[in-house]
Structure formats: C-alpha cells, structure tokens
Image (cartoon, rainbow, N blue to C red):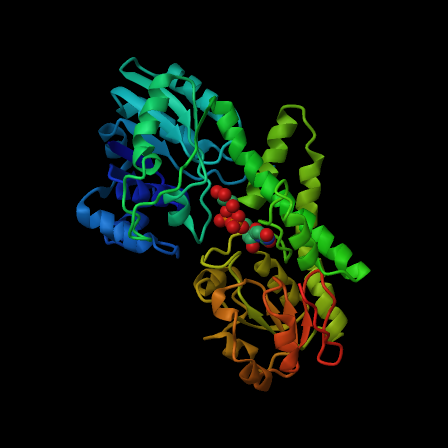
Length: 457
Ligand code: UDX
C-alpha cells in the first residue's frame, strides 16, 4: 500500500521505517528541513537501536522516501499523523500540529483518505478531527478518521513496532478497519522477515477494534497505569528502607501473582522521558475537563517528583557537607539504549547537586551531547572510569549494560571514597562490597564491607 507519515519523530520515523520493512511504499515528511536532509542521507537524528540500519535498508529498496508534507498528503490513500503533542503550560496537550495537518489535508487532498492518528492525544481528538475536516472540506475530499495508538518504547522502538503486544484500531466504520487490517497484514499473518531477528516472527498479535474514543483512552490509560506501578513500587521501596525489608524480594513476591505481573516493579530514581511525565499530566487534565478528579494520578506524579529528594538526602547523609565534593554520575539518559534526556530524572538530580556546589563528573554512553546543552557546567568524561576519578561518591542513574560489570579494582583505585549510590539497584551488593564499596541502593538496607551479609533471593 501507499502510506504517508506526517512527522518524523520517534513514533513517526519508526512507524515509517517499519511499515516500509513489512512491504509498503512509504512517504515520510517533517516540517524540519534539516532533519529531512539528514534522513535522506540515511542518518537518524537520535540514537535508537536498529533504526539506522533498517532505515538505510528501506531506503535502498526505494520503499521509504522523504518528501514535503503537501506531496505526502497528495500521494497516499492512508495518511498517518505522527506529529508532536507537547505539553502546554497547564499540562494539556498542544494539538495545534495535528490541526495544521488536518488543514493541509483539506487544502491539498482530493478523493478518499484514511487519516490515522498515531500521536498520543486526548480522548475525542478523532471526533474533533472529523468535525474539522467536515467544516473545512470544500467537497473534493472523502475520508475516514481512525485512531491507531503506538506503544513503542524508546530503546526498543523497532522491536516493539514489528512485534507489538497488540494493535489497537479505533474506527467508526468498516472501511477504515479493513484498510488498517491490510496495512498490518504482514505482521498479523507472520509474512515478513524481521530485520533484527532475520526470520519471520511467529507470535500471534491481537488486533483490537474499538471506537475512536476508546482507542485514545487505551493509550493514555496504559501509560498512566504503568507510571502508577512505578510510583507504587517506589513508595514500597521507601517503606522497605524504613522497616528493614528488601524491595527486590517484595517485588518478586508480588510479581508472581499473574494479576500483578513482574514488569514495571523496578524501584529507582523515578520515571522520565517524553511520554510518562507529559501523558500523566495530560490525562489528569483530560479527566478534569470531563468532571473527573483523577487525584490518584496527581499523587503518582508527586511521588515521582520526590524521588530526586531521596537521592540528594541519601547523599547528604553520607557525604555530610556536599559543597566542594566530587560526584561521579554514571548515566544521564532517562533509560538505557537511548540518548534522550527529556524529563530525565538524572538532569534534575545533577542540577540540584550543582546548586549545592558539587563538582559533577558524568559519563553516559549516548546521551552526553544532548545533556551538554541542558547542563553545561558538568565535566563530561570519556568513560565510567574517567568519571570515577577523584570522586567522593558514584551515582548510578541509568542502568546501561556497559556499567554492569566494571573493573571494580580499578574503580576502587580511582575514587577518593568508595561510596556507591545505586539509583537503579543494578549492582550485586555482595560483589561491590567485596571490593570495599559501601552500597546504598533503593528499598534495601545500605551495605558496607563491615556489615555485609549474604541474602539469598
Ligand atoms: C513508554 C511506554 O512504555 C510506551 O509503551 C509508550 O509508547 C511510550 O512511553 P518509554 O518512555 O520509551 O515508553 O520508556 P519505558 O521503558 O516505559 O520507561 C519509562 C520510564 O520509567 C523510564 O525512566 C524508566 O527508567 C522508568 N521505569 C520503568 C522505572 O523506573 N521502573 C520500571 O520498573 C520501569
């Protein structure tokens, strides 16, 4: 099929590449000309595993092309809207980019168009989109509007798009459903070769058809629920610390109940990224606009904001006076396998330490370029060892694989004080204390070489 994708951000670009991978002819566009130029040369403006290789492959086959918006709208029967919906001052999503696309469609498209909204939007956006098209249509446009939310995670975006847990289609007519079923047929029928696994996937993918309002709510409710799970386990972690329990064991015990499940029960420094924090705020505002006080989610957000306080107070307790101390930061990105630092909890923590006149020596495998423009007053280091040099404490803030098994003897020699604040419970406590480190994790007892006991999970 001929498909156009409007907006080449994480969702748009991944969708464009993956739809081309499964056999469609895809035109992708963005309002940022520089980005389009880069994409035309086979470059990707952010770090995302497998995306560059898959893009170059689709480019080479000619199935993926980058063009301007008008051409994209004129050329394809199915137009996917993947533009940004950034937060406004009041927390609501800014939908002006979506309205602009709708306006361009009315002005430039003739004949039938299936307009698919993939951006994360408030419930009733498809209804509004439909009304807008109806009011401004000069007569030559026939259309359906569908909602097809995307559930991809940064760091595994290609994998998630090609092997989704579910495909959700919100549509109010059979024509739209049938076109979307055709678009996703290669995934539903295991009829493509995955560029990552080099074979045809065999997992059955549920194709869920709903009305557009429900589809829009599925996306926001899913993100809000996952964020709630994280704040819940973070509170349990605080309780474990206060009461002398171990949150890893508690989470393991809870997660074995299939009604709860083990995922998203990792306590830490809080959730970040461009989805959870903004979607949570937007969802609260949406509920308010419909007269529902979703105060549960306000608390989820508050708990998340407080995670940075925890880190600072733990550090203060150990280092006493922060001013003049040197802290090594391992990891800045909001999660591993991405260079994205938007709403990254590490940024807030680093800013607060800088305000306390702490010297920060930071290293992140991918996110340093993006971090530099946000927090320039940091010494950016060439690797984790360089960052540890002369440090009074090491703060592990993003659980990159690269940090998993350091040469602890070397780290021990480099630091001024062997104090490890493990913000993601990444390290095996027994292992680090063997090398003389004090280990302070999340939701477990602090362990030092003199107090170490072996706990069997
Ligand atoms: C999220 C949703 O998972 C995805 O379905 C949606 O499409 C976009 O938003 P993403 O923001 O890429 O994806 O990251 P995710 O893996 O969900 O992690 C979000 C944040 O939660 C990260 O900061 C992560 O470190 C944190 N997190 C996650 C925890 O603190 N604990 C956990 O157990 C899981």
